[in-house]
Length: 409
Image 1 (tube, rainbow, N blue to C red):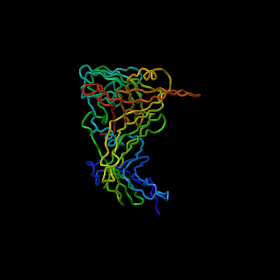
Image 2: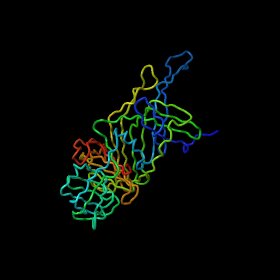
Image 3: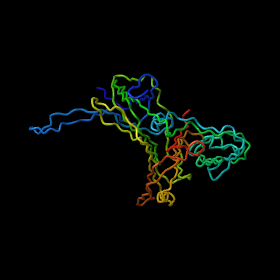
Image 4: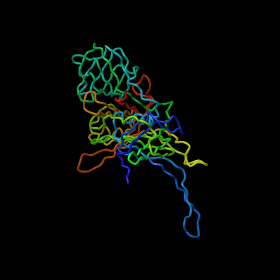
């Protein structure tokens, strides 16, 4: 007797054309995972009659549903389509380019921090935003260190781009005169203010070793949770709600695309900035995007719900910070709205792949300190809010969050 094994089980998914149209055939995507716990569930209704035997004699299966979670390690290019569905975005946007500029001056602020100042262009109208990672090209002589390095934008005006080289290399000071170009690497995505996508997925668990397959249909990816520990791999999980499941002895997907091969991220390679300042004492960071989906719980004449309904999007998280000064604590006490930027690379090299997460407006809702024979830590929960001052020609998007992945082409 063969017993199904997780290592022989393949997880694949494909976006449906719409509600009630289960996906099949070509163009599905295989996914890496640590676990996938999707299952069909049924409500059970028991009789409440009082019987002289003092025993229940009837019960029924009720409304069916699908729920579970896809858990994985956060990798560049690993879950782009899932993330887009969580953000209710129709697509990832192409990188922003400055085009060739000959009026940019590079200057060192301190260490890997520096500025790029333009005399005639406008970084804001070009489309650059705080939290984007850009790579410059075209620098000569003393400006050569600026070429092809991941530069994280931490502050931005129409003429001055301020930030840090993520690999720790110092900005190369250079007077204007070179023909240089800045390009935000890969693509970026954010929660839009209108024209929101409403995606449905068919997700399959194919048990190849026992020739069985389960297809979970009309699934909504209801959120995502990212955890970035100080030591260890970054993780991501996607809670799922769906309407039903079908079964078979073979995959419904023909020749699915191979699983992405992007490297996994670790918080040891990267940086976290709060209110534009690098915080070197953060011991962990996590955040979640909750779509607040719901189902009606059944309709007359059917054992399946008619739809999975989206709610408002909430974004919240938590930072653990060593208590080395009052700056972080006082953000909570004064109810200061702060920005949080977290950028992580796959290696500590100039042009390593990178993912960045930017929350332009956050309220920190606590600063609880622990105790003991150790360095004291503050637990700092936060809620991210829509940046209503953002938009075209400003330094942020009109959105709760911005995500960038350099591996998307």
